[in-house]
Length: 382
Image 1: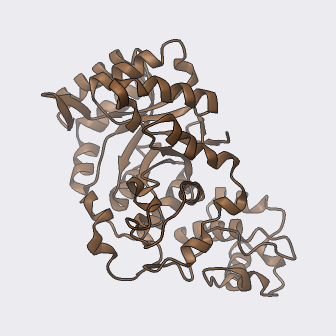
Image 2: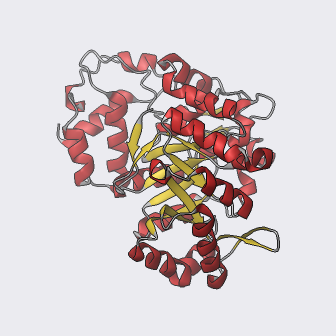
Image 3: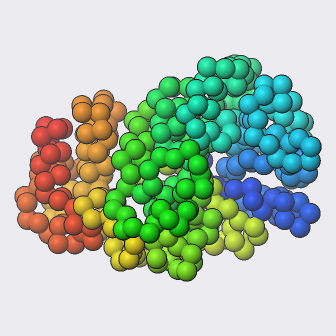
């Protein structure tokens, strides 16, 4: 298992994490089975968005004697009321739900406390200016939650939350179909068929800005819906008109800026192992570029996917990394010091480009690489 830094939190998390969908399987016996397999395979991070007390209790029992083996991302504002899940902003309900969560999980702290499911700007503003964020900060001061996070499907809301400086971790839906969709306060729009009827071209700029801002500000991204609820793995269901493999979906998510871990949904140990196959997959198996280039409904022409098909460069320039740093700098219209430092430590720089054009002949997306190298050399003066 490979581990990555979760933004500036200081936490090192497994790049394959665990969603909680399967915890409720087989009378909640799935919680122990999946956490046992996670521990065997080196997964140390899992999400617990559900407020179902039976699931929380089963997870608490499964964690007995090994709480320190796992980094828990659990959700503030996800409560259980009248026998069902509820997303609440009522501070009394939120506090009661948090206390119940800790009791059922048999722990006195949560590593990442996620402010749950914030998809509208009005909701975010009320959270930021009201008692919910204040409560989260109070919990952090007390050490009850170690880091404050927020989950969202809306890049506009997520970007506002990240720019506020109030959150350290963002849980966001990342996959190559959702990334083409503009911001919406209705999560159903992400997989509505009507939104894929016309030919879609390139990543939504606000989503690109979100990932780059998270990278720049040290906000770690934890990924949900990497498989689009399973639709991307089925050619008949995929909005792209072509199926991807689980490994390709994971690699796409893990190559976005700021992403630390993908929370793989699994209803069984076997499904979890399908995602864990990523760790031993070959570069050819991970390579999503040929599939993306052949999508009948979507075009990524001119957009660098950081797929490294442009390699090898005769001057040994890491074109994908140079392009990523260029995009991060261009988003700010200046070069942030952290980006400059990362660029500086590259073994070779854009200024060494001899404009042979070999990279462009190999790029599946027709990216103007030589032009990008010239811009990077000018921007970084190297």
